[in-house]
Image (cartoon, rainbow, N blue to C red; front, side, top):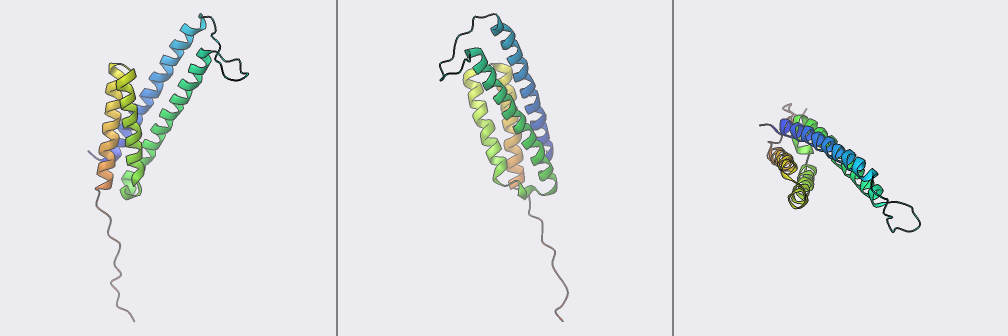
Length: 145
C-alpha cells in the first residue's frame, strides 16, 4: 500500500472520530442540561462543570479535525514529494500514539480500534515516506565550452 492511500484513510478515520466525538458531546449536553449547575471554581467566571466539559470536548474535536487536515495534506506531499514530509509524519504518528494510549485508559472498544487503526495507518505511511527513494537530480551532460 502507498503512503498516499494510508494517509487518506487515516484522514477519513479522523473525520469519523471527530464526528463521533461531537455526537457524544451532544448526548452529554442533553443529559447535563437537566442536572443542577455545579459551579466551576475559576476566578470570577460563572461557568458550570458541564460548560467546562463542553469547551474541552469542542477543543478536542478541533484538534482531531486539524489532525485530519494534516493527514490529508501530507497525503498530497507523499504523492508528489515524499521526502518533504520529513519528521512531520513521525510527529503526527506520535500524536496518534498518545491518543491511542489515552483511549486504552479512558475509552471503550470501538474507539480503541479506531485510534489503533489511525495510528497504524499514519505510522506505516511515515515509514514508507522516509524510506522512499530520493529522486535523482538531472545531470547536465553538456560539455563545458
